[in-house]
Length: 391
Image 1 (cartoon, rainbow, N blue to C red):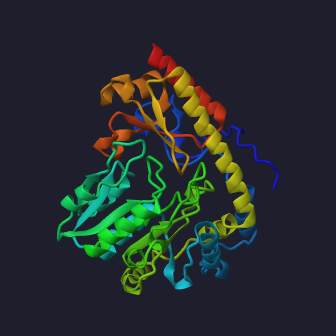
Image 2 (image 1 turned 180 degrees about the vertical axis):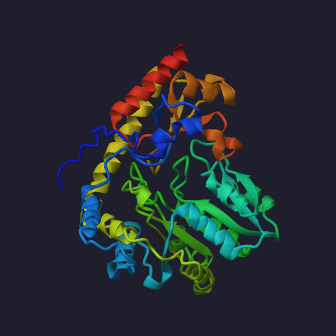
Image 3 (image 1 turned 30 degrees about the vertical axis):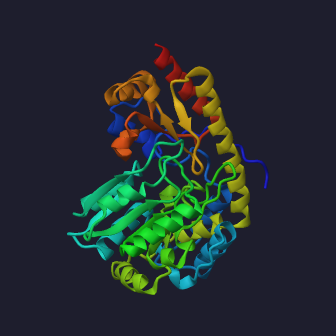
């Protein structure tokens, strides 16, 4: 594969992209550099576009069945990248990770049940269960070190006989933790002993950085496999979020029967025309070559942010992610309250970032920065932020 030009700047305005065309709705102004929504400003790989275009050569876009190659592509990819051997019957299509959380909440829990999340964490982990009438218990991560860890004592104190589900981010969003095997085994033991079902959101699993390794939660022990519903997707890695192609992996037959039965009854496991095509193309040899180039570019972007902050804005501390294209930016060194930080970033620096507090109160004073874009845009954003900080 030829060298990909990730420095190419592509105008996404007026294309319906939320990160651009949704600025006024979410920030109240349109004159912002968008580094917030978690999709990338890199062109979707040409081999995926070509696969979709080839299907569009056929003049009928009618009902289609799942291609035979779809699940095998997932099986082969997971085996080669994560050393986890999965079976065809464990796999089902789901219409996105967030919607997937909603399906599990409705299929596997009751209104009186409690659901636990470990904050700061991806905000739909709270919003989806609450929107479906469930009680969400927030258990803060231990943030004493550079990378947060699970506070198992705190977790034990918040779980009770009404707690039925733990929603787990693996790798973690927004901080980018690749959880180690020891932690995953301990979490599996904890949840198994308490009869807790675990959703493991692994959408960033193919974006491990700087030599780190993603470990699927369900792969670490039989106990983990027996209590887990895993969500994965090629959408973050290959910048095809708009295609909505996600899948769930469930080893436990009893859980599969109940959950897959609910999916089937509501036709949530019925993929739209383009989802399997995009997944098969992504999980190919070309996909792996593109992925490697993209990850190298993202790593260099992260190093650029680290160097820039160290040299020109030492009040800001970017936490190096172990996975994903999202950088957790600790801004507490500026000494600003929540509203002051938002005003600095949005109204003075004219940058759109995700407010850390949206991921839980533990994120107050932090921002989430998307570096999945050309370096020139990142430089411009940091220059604007430096000027605002100095002004």
